[in-house]
Length: 163
Image (cartoon, rainbow, N blue to C red; front, top):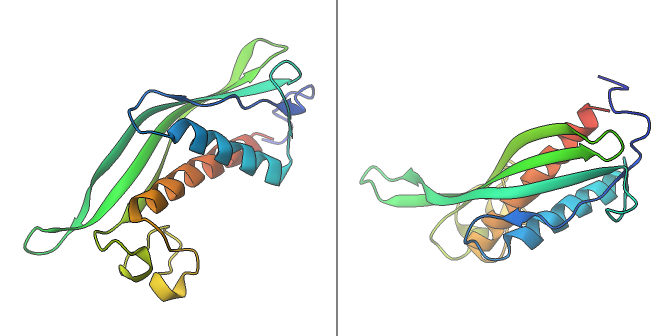
């Protein structure tokens, strides 16, 4: 796929993501994560829309917060917070979309109130509790952060594989 991005694409604008859900703060969180990932990788210069050769637009279409695992007595032991987002990557000069795709990301959390001792791999990295130095804080907030970080990583990877 090398060379499939037009040569004139050397920058990207990432305007605030639209949120079509009632989940407070999602637009800002997803947008911040996208900006962070693109700035970290530095594959395209992040700039304002009026100077960009491409624009990445996102719309959060749905969030779900549903039971994920149960005990044999059918009591909920773990919830999964999932964010669904539509992304369009637009070529300004050619006036066409380079990418149109739906992404989703999730994070898990339990009911214990303390994710550092809930015996759940909250961020899906294969480590739990004391083995995982980044599992701390409010369970649902942490799951939300994990979900939006995963989406940002997936969007960046999708664009990088087009390179």
